[in-house]
Length: 154
Image (cartoon, rainbow, N blue to C red; front, side, top):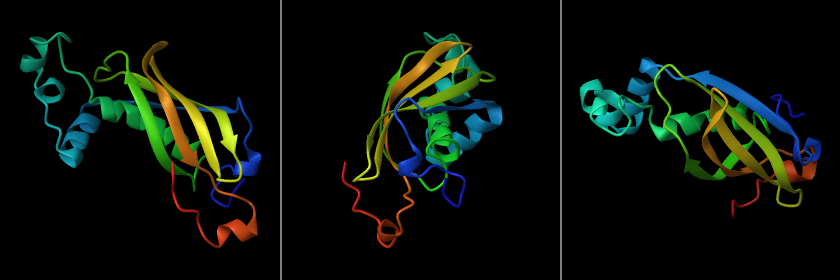
């Protein structure tokens, strides 16, 4: 493990996995809308949202997906890792008050580049709401590699 409690690239193995859970509530949606500027009424206006295919307000897709970021940053590879890319498929909407469980699992490791490919999935009540893959740069225990970070190329 690194000095922040995350895993070094040398500690990882294919199949290693971790989860992170977050219940997304009204305050999260309002703060997210303010932070990013996405004020789509399907997220903020119940009357408008009731008339849509969703039948009520839904959480921003990217807010729901951000639980994956929390799983990566806090669990696997954890603190010190750098998010490089993410592919997402939004399968179902997330509603206010629902708990998103993000699971990340190591599917590929490139030690020379310190790259890790993670399978990512978010579930609510056992049903997949988001699936995808992430590319992450992990820390290393090698002193010679800590002097300069590699150029981020995907």
